[in-house]
Length: 490
Image (cartoon, rainbow, N blue to C red; front, side, top):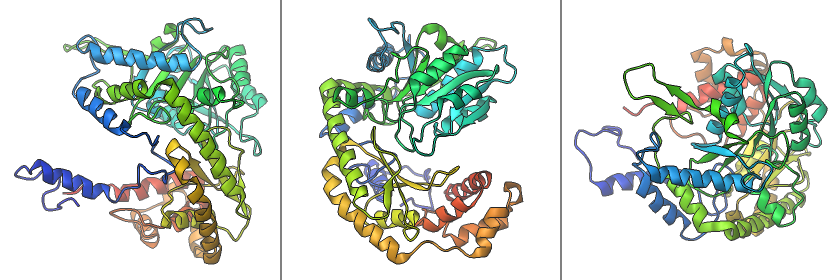
């Protein structure tokens, strides 16, 4: 653990070996990033030697600065190669209907989406109140982009059965002030692919850009298609798709954080750049949000793609496809559980139809058995659910997951649903974010076992309270709860 008497900056420097031992001790409390038991946040291909290769490549370029491509041509070459690989995989490049695709490497999907919104906004300086149309299943980073960039967000509901937006609803949401329409391929929460071709068509008919968010699983979709999966059109082969984002630190299995934002042609990308010369220093020109960028993640991604190659990604996609099928069968085998969507990408998402089976308790029971899943709260008529992001490393664990899920479900039924005090539920349902006081927040947090230090092992009570709260209050509570965890070590 961190020595609280010295913190990160001791009076006298410490030996390297001791510092590394401290970091390893801290890491022991983390969720496992390898081994196929963590169904969110990390992407493990289970390929021997890949970590060591990526770490070595990272070290080679860790101190190279992407701020100036003329000073560090190695980084420019690798970045261009990554953009070219992503463009070719997603229907662009020579010999396609989108031969002039260009792009940029960003730090992750959120930055890619913010830049897609920025490019669309800045291309329409005539709009005093620009707007974007986003299905409610679109990633929350679009709401973040709208907030940061002062753009209005027009959410479109999804069909409760298909979990996709209805195209007519998307078309109806487009206004004269709309400058971007969004589709997901696939959506994060449920892993389903929006009707991209139809959405792009209505956007094009209105003269509006269409961005396809393929950050989450878009890298895998072309390989699944090659394996015979019925993947619908979603990339630059679709007329009207003007930009696509895809994360390489997800199913391209590169270390974090590397994403690629692609535009159909250079003119569409131009507003993404920021340039400034009205000061006495160097003329700043940035294609992405950051100025200084470490070359480490780019070099690591380059090494990963070069090492795995097309044959490697095809093999990993096949292994992942089989793992998804096995996990889905495991869910179907447990009475009271139901797949929220039939898997069509790399996600298994399920809910509970049995009122005696509390999903949040089930998640805690799985965690106690070494399986780390992601609970999703009920929203706008959609039930609470459990999200499993499936990677190739999960495949060897599939046979173990079925019995563990059955045991966890039995334990959750025996424990019964979480029962919060009626007055607490009433408070959660009636409070406004503005009514929260430090004392009230502290009392709520203490009652739920939250405070300075790591979160409690069991989170069912916290999730139950959050689900009872209206959306705006839920957001404020999460901000406050996370704020309690993030305090400086003096």
